[in-house]
Image (cartoon, rainbow, N blue to C red; front, top):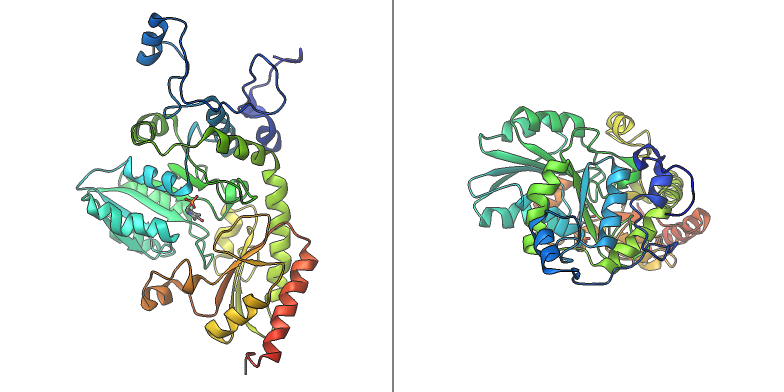
Length: 408
Ligand SMILES: *Cc1c(COP(=O)(O)O)cnc(C)c1O
């Protein structure tokens, strides 16, 4: 321990402070930065101690597949900030999603999910769960009647993302949680697009929140990671047992990278969001743009829900160019600062054409049902100066005129 002041209960600290100090475990050396415990196992002072620790009679680490001090710091910092009783980190966002679903079901059970899901999440719900005897139903997440109608006696889990990828639809998390709970099902929310800064699904009634820490939490394009948060009971029983026995755990090195990232998360998300708002305003009404979808704008179709459940519009803007795929490709190929990538939540602004990349696997009908049109682009706004980003967008839009690809 350093300093002689009284140690405060970390739960009473304000959010920005929690993200800098929360969960820190200092070794005997008193290091300032969190230590990387790059170790597989742990040694015991005696056989008796090994026996007691393995039995759980004595606290302490046993093996890094079960827990690791650097990973534990990341988990505790995330739990504090999210307002969750407990958290478990995973190797990637998909490991978090898969564990959060598979740990809660058995053959014969049923899962209901909103249809607008990240591609790999859709695969897990639509293809993988049924292979193990768990039926799944996909609904239009915005239509509460469809959630109600999908319920069966064996329904165990509701799953959704909000805002959705890539069309940024927003669902009423509190209302959907209430429908799930009426039948004894649990709600899992993939909160990646909102980030932990802008939306707190547990406070809205969700039972588990999952993140791809790869996105805003790392925020600088370096490592993959994931985290599952919820009640002590759910995390310490079902989720912990599943992760510990199947092994998709976070590396201590990546946990260390993510711990450093959490220190700057609010600053980054706030700045990226400010940039995204300016870009959404610039794009809306531009003559080559058919529509702009940004949860921070009053013209968003679910603006009333957003006001209730989000603290801001997020860092991602979706927009549709007139001229379909040809115009979308020509425009994106002309960008120079904004890079073409299917990733998101990075300090670098990234643009993707969902119809030919992230949503390529879907049938044209399924894409149309989700609003993934040929002219749609998803822009993940980074930390560059917004004026430089707008200059880049403006130059690429103007190039459409010269190429004769502008709207008639
Ligand atoms: C990226 C992403 C995932 C998957 O995360 P990985 O870290 O790539 O495994 C899941 N859900 C959403 C909404 C995502 O954006």
